[in-house]
Image (cartoon, rainbow, N blue to C red; front, side):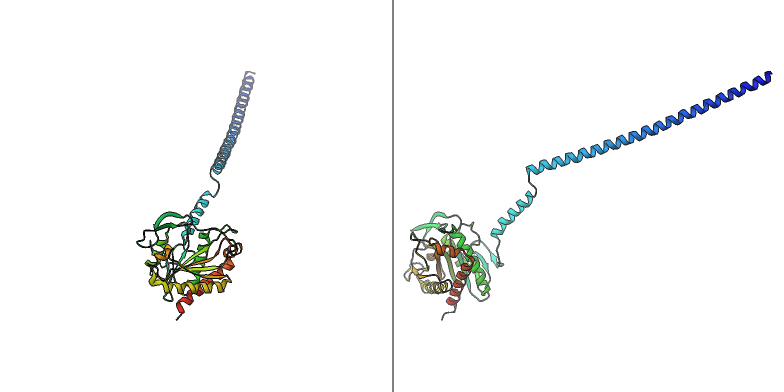
Length: 322
């Protein structure tokens, strides 16, 4: 009996141990699962934190870009560059390539026919009222250079008109084989009348053609004229015959090409640029900016082409005459 009871006790103890072992294993399993779940939850939480940090960084970067945009508009550097390029383009040579450009010699284009013509676009953007002698060694003085007149109808200043025509004449003469010297190819210069004559002299040109436009208190006055020195000019009398021929040929051809009224060749010794010139010279007054019709005509591209053809034809005639 005792033996049977002993066996039963051993069996009960074994069952208890097995139960305790199973319970312990269950606890371990539950704890492990909780750790996995806790780890997963922690991982997801960290991912959310990282995502939120990224979003906050992007938002901050976006706001910073918006602030920068308000202080400096997009493309501002491009605008600045284009302004610099535009400022540079105004001084670049628009069509032809120069042979060379040095201070005091103007802008030179090579000759193909052996003739070199200086074109002076009259006036400049800002006048210079400082006095200079009207001729070498003269005691009388005049303003160095003025900005010229203005179109009564168009409002176009003379210095702009003369440069427009001068640039077109330059290209036409080059196409005809002439060498060309330009006293200016921009409006932002300060070149006196004597200095313009000096540019022609230093370049060794054959002729000096100065482009201007006229004005009158009487708005009905119209027509073209040329100007040269008198035969008794104390400074340039030796150039009178050639200057008169250049003036007459250009005036005749100009009026034939444009249909403008022909006035006359005005001989005078009052022009500084003529008195200082050491080569045959003429001033062409292309028309009256105070006359509504001529003012409008001179600003039109079609009429400018006619003016250029007329001037170039006159230069051809001057060089080919007997």
